[in-house]
Length: 288
Image (cartoon, rainbow, N blue to C red; front, top):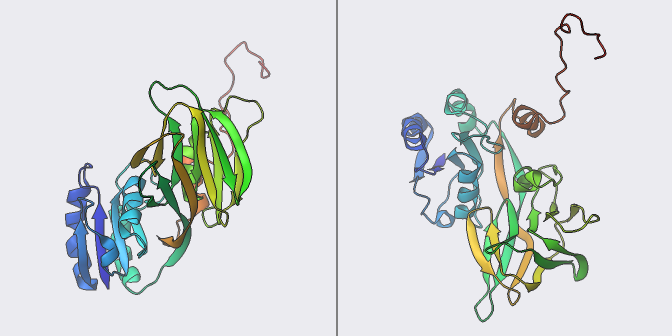
């Protein structure tokens, strides 16, 4: 087999764990890219499996590095939460023989293209996995914006901005902003206004087969943020188009680790509240 070993080498423990992984992979194949500086153009290389060390941010970066030639990713969590990178290296090591035999499942996930058209400049197309965010910048006044989907007016609002997220990104900034959790293998976008100045605007889930156009209407400039990692200035004269990418992110899933199990373990989703079991203090009634 051919492997990528990737990660953010500036994060604590990543370089040490990557060096520990290197000899473990040698009996099973060749490491064709060992990149902890996140600089290689991986789209020009071929591999069967990518080991990404760090947190979910490292996986987002790796997905964008691989561009339009996506390699199945196995995330090794050295970060905090880890929705995509949910295994430790100690958990991966005994599974290497199975991985080398192809004894794993691959799930395919929606990616997007964001076309950024700055006034007077050539359009730029940015590939992403998590989300496109329009957010206010200094002096942090409200921004007014509108969204079209498939040529039809979908939303016009004012507030702190807007999140358009994939299902993978729905458990990130979108979730923190009160947006919906979307099943990771669905082909849909979650559209979540940030602090809308209205009582009627609510998050929306819509098809990823539509093309979305986002425009600032007037007033303050803002920022366009891709996957929390690429920031571009945005003015009312600029345009943003978001559409489904022609490639999918490919995530390796091993036995015993499922999406909903991760939601329960990491965010306590869908679990019962913890009730008090100890007896009430002396002199108090049970219904106090």
